Image (cartoon, rainbow, N blue to C red):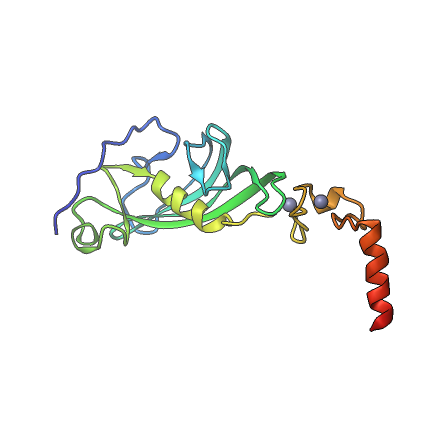
Length: 187
Ligand SMILES: [Zn+2]
Ligand SMILES: [Zn+2]
């Protein structure tokens, strides 16, 4: 299987983990707590993490025989638009992550499919692809400002939440109204 050569990682990027101080001995552990600026386009069409917003990384790195298992939570603010009433949504999201990053040239690295496990580059781990997948899985494709958002009046486009209960566009001409009363009597 042809191995694709990824872009070299920048160890100073906050979404790149350096595992140099994690012994390559199964069971060795290290925790990582840090803030990282969110990369651009982190989200789905209607909702996502604003570029540059503070992500909070709370991760556990564990040496296993073929690589490093990264697990934990990445949380951050999300901004978007209600898919029913278009009102702005301001919320926070906590995304669980768990991924095995195989050591270069380990059996797993040589045999596992491209999308099956992550790959380390030397001592470096790139969190961004896993973060993106996890965010896309977590965020709703049709976000709502609240579960029972009533949406918009289809005639005037104003949110039902802002309209009086008897709001209606049925403008009945008084003459027709009289006629319809007549018809009703005949029935
Ligand atoms: Zn809404
Ligand atoms: Zn209306």
